[in-house]
Length: 245
Length: 320
Image 1 (cartoon, rainbow over the protein chains, first blue to last red):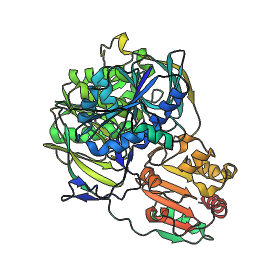
Image 2 (image 1 turned 90 degrees about the vertical axis):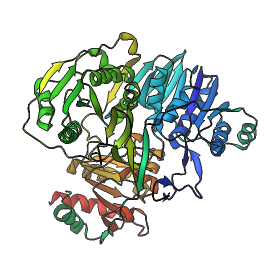
Image 3 (image 1 turned 30 degrees about the vertical axis):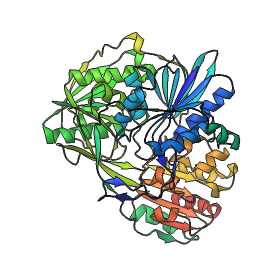
Image 4 (image 1 turned 45 degrees about the horizontal axis):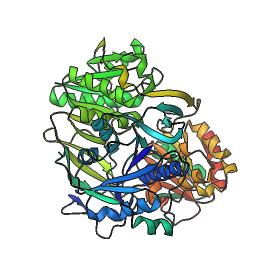
């Protein structure tokens, strides 16, 4: 069984967000780039499944310029067998999904993170599944493979479900899929250097959305402080002033 | 010209979120002269369906086919697409929740539509179609132009107040003609926690962090949550330590919530945590460290020991 894990290259989650060109573009000066946190968990689970002998091969794929290669190398260091990069700076989710569609055939299982932590689109996984005309399951928080059968745990409102799915299938995964992301070991980093990273030319793809303007949230008013021994006053303020209780 | 809304039902009932979606569509329809059609999948009683008209639905298409019970994303998105085509919809509105996020991308591809997710207000302009959404997990906003003759959006919860109006609707059974081969998911087991307030529905959320010190200290917070009819939440270190379930983790990688009131006890307020709660209308922080970043995001704060403050808080709420 072969797995494809989609990897988005995003600013470190502690990045201070700034914009440039009259607030029409993200200012990436000095930004540290990481594997999107949910993609990293998906990859971690894929590596666990491979170690357990449930799958044979892990490919990671990213749509991006050569600048995203360190992120793909990190994914290889964590345990992916090979990597694919579609060489284009994609502008929106549909373009990313369209580019991935040309490299995503032939896998039994495709894993996508629930969203990317930059533009919070939650769209690429579902779009790719539709472009490939395969089934998809969202909010997946667990994957097990036994006797060639793939079982998902899916979060629903106020609970969870166990699902049996037929492959090929795309899972949009969220928290719980793996406990903690793997940190690459020195041996992994060394091996990653010689693992195959294939660069593919982009196909012509359409964009359907465009950012017009960015803005930062307005500054919040100062926090109103209440003394530790006067909790009653806090509750009164919440009740009478904020009308929140 | 019409606007199509898909809303799920929860055991045959609609929630406030459903009415937010219909009201939103009705407000856009008023601008553009379109009509509002709702597609409802699953068994819902007539009087429940009629509630949708109160918020501006002109027509409700009901699909009662039992096969959809498995919430198969592929089959359900085909049903929504069939309704959009039958109604000649130029805008499709879904919820920005688990199911809406699962269906909207598939629907947009099939309809060759432009998609934007997590929309937080009425369109800023209809032509070009520009919407506002949060990006960088609440650290910024973006205005986005959506192309295409048809647009698909998901609307963020609690971003549009439902407006009641005097309206009537027609209710029709609808057959989306989805074939058996589109159903590929089999539900083996469903586990539901009953009797608890769902985090995503809660108007008030009571949350604890590392400052709670151990798994055994949560009695006071649970009592407070019960008193207030609040949902229970926690920060990431708490769920990582196993003090509380992962399903209670709010923050960038956990659940993103937007309640009226968020009460944070012993949470320092790492930027990833704030990303998940910054949309709350009022934030209260109790933390022993006066320098904790949570106080920059909070509206009200106490510098103090959670073990001292929580019992007093419970007592003061009882006396309200």
